[in-house]
Length: 389
Image (tube, rainbow, N blue to C red; front, side):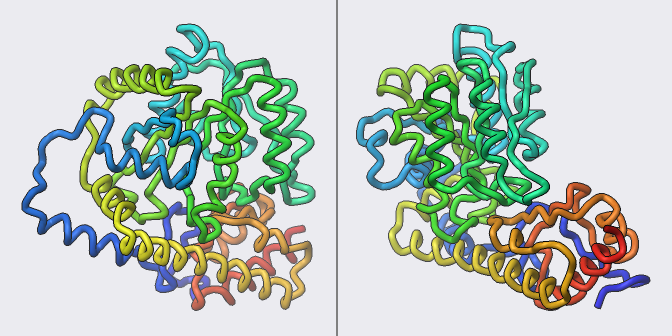
């Protein structure tokens, strides 16, 4: 195995899917659709509309909200094609700063989970928000969700605050509220007039099921919330460098959504002016063909299942070694990341002595695990935990 003095290093810090051979994976359905696009003589490289490819936007929003979404039937859903999930967050944030509650919202509090994806903070700060706060999320002692702390922080939030929520596969903890807990969160947010801004970066990738991974967003919509949902297709289509994102806007009526979109058009015009077509075409083509859609869901399940397998294999090995502590959180967490609960000393030992590169927080990307390195990783974690309590 890769040990001391070995040139082989194990990268657990990156945020992308890898095969069991440690290689990037181009989804077979994506390869097929790319070839289809390349040989389609009717396509050209003219500008798209400012808000993006209409069939991409409509179908991306449909995937988020569901086939039978009442909001879609009532014509109060809009989409903006954005540069990845980050671009969707940015356009949403820029809009909220200008128009959310009056015409200047720099002082409106924005709440981000503690911990969260580090870019959330930067996106809202760079969009002009000056009061960025955290709500409690992770309970380190019980290695799970701090629901009580989360609800207290939302109760205490000023009315009309903006709350950034992870739709599924919370990054970095991999710990999501259960449907029952989501209902409690929604109840407090509704009572306190808090605005939900969902970040959905892992739909389908988390559980292998598109609908299950979108449950929270759909529940909030069914409860009558107006909301934003930033969708990324980087992970679930493996289209990282094509920058394929969508901002789904759910408003109270069709008029309202049209007004929001016309303001967003002005914002987009001054940021990237016009979005790229390739990735959006790949996604739109796949989502509008029943055969390709079925093939895509199968590809997504392949990725999700590999991650689930690595979780159960790592947990089984740590338990077999009798590694101190509890390890059931590794299989209870979902998505690409696991918050191992390792402390900074243990992390440092793994990096320096074992060449296992993970985040200082103890977050590992489960895709770094392969059938070939599982034993090495498990025994290294065992050694780290045994030596540094």
